[in-house]
Image 1 (cartoon, rainbow, N blue to C red):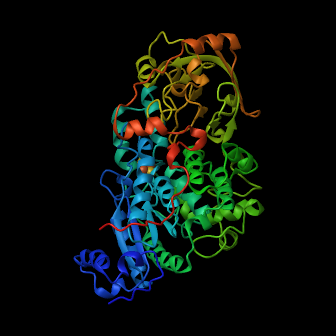
Image 2: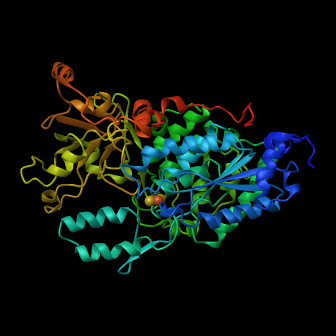
Length: 574
Ligand code: FES
């Protein structure tokens, strides 16, 4: 029988020589586990978001088996458990509505169960942030193993990128430049293996930032999902998490302010998804790391675009992997990197950067030979966004980064869809499209609709970009002069809700200003008549979400979930 002197957290369940210990062990033995695996060894939870409804995670069951091999080999006990999968392309009204629900599930699953460390298996956009937020509020030793990107897409002899080419093709169809037959034929060529979007969309961005933060083993971000080396990485991560438990290296010791700064530098260097801003703010809020929206602009400002990947460039994640991946970008960041930040693999991020190399300078550049100027995100202020807004300049038409034009307002997504192609819509190439009702409370969930498609009558005239403003997000695979995350959102009473068609809006990107050029007294009068317009959920998760969600500048976490509750559970279950 096991002795009652265990040093790990799991000993409070499996190490007890009494009725409670009997209960904890006996039911686990119905899975064929022998007595000696309850001898005080580290118990490793493998949090698996596999689901056939999250197609980017279709191979995670197999990957979990490789993690288990490593855990067994290192002398741990692996126990896999499921967590809600957030299939970005399947869930309505938006997967983002459920990120915090996943975070709650992961947090409580980890805390409630007798585990000492955790491996997070995820990858599709909101999944890794949700898992990490939950894990951070418990703060056990934690390693991320990402799903990894799909193989490059191909169609009619050329490479096509997840999401990015959907937006392009769809505009081409509306402009008459592509047949519907070709459009539908491209579906299968775009998604031809397991894994996440292979552009530098949100999944690849988050994976790259996680690697820059040292929360996974090197090469985790870019190895294709189907590459045998990803299975090896899973195996090694299984070994490593056992060592982290033995050394008691917790998530909060890795995800420090320095790690977040490295993530912001990486975000700028890769021209990363705007969604990452929200997720990093939320994660920092769980950990108590001081991080503000303005940090993204201030820290990333001097970092040029070092990666030539869609949607800001030409290549895809497979090319990025073969060119050296995140390690090569860390090296290219040079002295800007917080080199002393520690990582889960035991080396500093500076050591990892020093050992890396670039194998293709068409894909990964240097500070002396970047692919674009300062590229992270610009964080805007001004009377239209008192709590901030962002734009990704590397994805925008440069001429629109300083622009003044008259607003064409859509009150919500239904209004936009109904009137977009109305021949009488008063819109031209100087107009500013404004979309309301798409923030965290308004939609609810803040969907990826900020990159509004342009009216067909402008597309037919060759117009491919307009200044667009909303309280929504946009897909990390999307592009355009798109100002996002306006806070407060219109439904929360933000000035965005007061904009009317014909108002003049001035955007001065270099000065980081977004202003509505309407007299104060006019705005005051409009405010007196303003009322929320969107239907409020009356029950369930959606009601809890809308009642408690914070604005984009706080990462859209629920207000009562910020911070941590730790790993202790005082009471027994029987
Ligand atoms: Fe899953 Fe893009 S849809 S990563």
